[in-house]
Image (cartoon, rainbow, N blue to C red; front, side):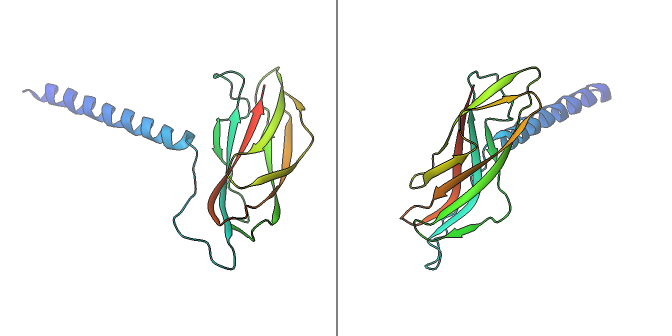
Length: 158
């Protein structure tokens, strides 16, 4: 095998490694980060929220005007330690990225078992146009049972 053939093989292998790394990196970047643990809550805080995940349901599979369908919001104050049934609030911002478009935020729900959504502000449906943003504040109630992990907020839009 000549030196030129070896160089071509090395280049092909390097390109393959780079492509695989890009695919794996993209998967981790766009996948929801569920911050869960098997560490039990302490008796003084039976409910511990370690993070907030956002799941956006768009009308069409190609839509992404609020960003990726799955996002890890996190935020200050995490982990949040609560008592069973205690109320808490969380605010997050959505920025409308579509050009010359308008869309509605139709619903906001909590999909994590045991948590109860008490209110959403602003009231829904909420209309948005290109370049606009809105801060959504949810008030929720912690579960009666012990919990340790991330809470998921679902937003439906069209």
